[in-house]
Amino acid sequence: MTRFDPLTLIEKGLPPTGHPRKVVVVGAGMARLVAAYELKRAGHRPVPLEARPRVGGRIYTLREPFTHGLYAEASAMRIPRAHRLTMAYIQKFGLKTRDFTMDNPNAWVYVGGRKLRLAEANAHPDRLGFDVAPHERGRTAAAIWKKAIRPLLDLLEKEGEAAWEQIVARYDEYSIREFLERDGWSEGMIEMFGLLMNQEALMNSSLLELFREEAGHYYTDMIELEGGMDALPRAFLPELMDDIRFGARVIAIDQSPEDVTVHFQTRAGRFSEKGDYAILTIPFPVLRHIEILQPFSRAKQRAIRQLHYDAAAKIFFQCRRRFWEEDDGIFGGGTITDLPIRNLYYPDHGRETGRGVLLASYTWSEDAQRWGSLSPADRIEQALENVALIHPQVLEEFEAGASWMWHDDEFAGGAFALFDPGQQTLLHDSIVAPEGRIHFAGEHTSLCHAWIQGAIESGLRAAYEISARA
Image 1 (cartoon, rainbow, N blue to C red):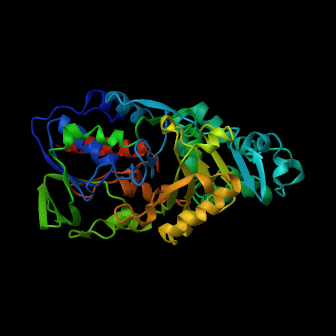
Image 2 (cartoon, rainbow, N blue to C red; image 1 turned 180 degrees about the horizontal axis):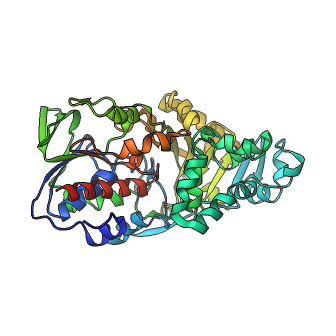
Image 3 (cartoon, rainbow, N blue to C red; image 1 turned 90 degrees about the vertical axis):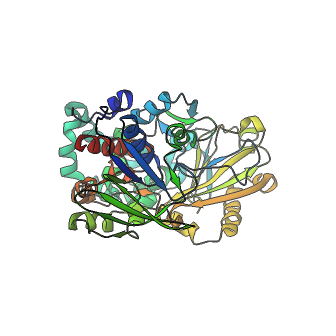
């Protein structure tokens, strides 16, 4: 076969096969759908096993408990236009999109009891009261961050993709905090960066995770799907619906030199599915609880045990009117706080109803785990108290609330993979490598963690690997 070119694969498909292979595809999300879809297009026989009664995995659009016409995105809520693979499938299926408003100068910054418009905070950062060094006064954390990573961006512009080898070799060992300290930042500026750029809970994660997003323009020029992000996984259903087995929870996996057997359980009992190959797209925290009858290599076992997964939590309020637009003039974007809710977002969708679903809190890591320790009712109550400090109207306009904790989801085990310092060098090759007739996909097997793009790329790669072997 020719070299792996994921964009061309989406456009033209895998080479048609004269020797169809049966491939058991295990998992919930986009990687599973993409791999099964492309293998079937090439003439193979995918058998997707899905524990849930739905497709999408961590693309999950909540429609309850909200009234007709309103919804909320429990996880993926935005797509950068720079993610060409994701955009290719959106165009392929003719899905309708609209711009996602990422930043809004009219939104608020609420830090240390001070409440400023984002535009004012950016123009006069000293008004936020951070104890920064004299040479940092009057400068934003975003501006100093851009200067700090400029040499790395210049290297990429000069040498292209080949520069990544140098960048990984030099910087993989650094956490975000270590990089900022090495660059001479004061503790006050590090605090400002953590709060205003939503990184405080992630300071001990690998620098490369954040830098890869910056270099790839992940948070600029973004879109969302009209009617909900679940339109993307549902677009694969016409081709795959007859192949998917829902309600099939995998409990054990075995393989021989000739085939792979996947054992699963439904409410009706235990069953098995035998194939020529298997693709495992399930997150590693979930895979830890599946019996592997022919043990994986030590390197794979270590990767499954050690790969770090982050937590994420969202809390939503259905509101009787869109007071943030009507009273505060905030149309899209998000507010930044140092409160437990951390970040609020003002979704554009639902405007035609007159009501709105406010993303009252979006948190990661330890911030998210703290919300997960509360009961669902207490999450709503405490989030209301926080939001009311910024938008007092919420107490009058609140109608219903919901929350979702991905680290408490038994089929996810976390929101997404997120490398600790050094883990890209130590683990990534082992994460990706096949084990006999078993191949691996999912955002955790890409270098585009936490994004639909990573799941799609990995699904294409796994389908390509099996096509090449078949």
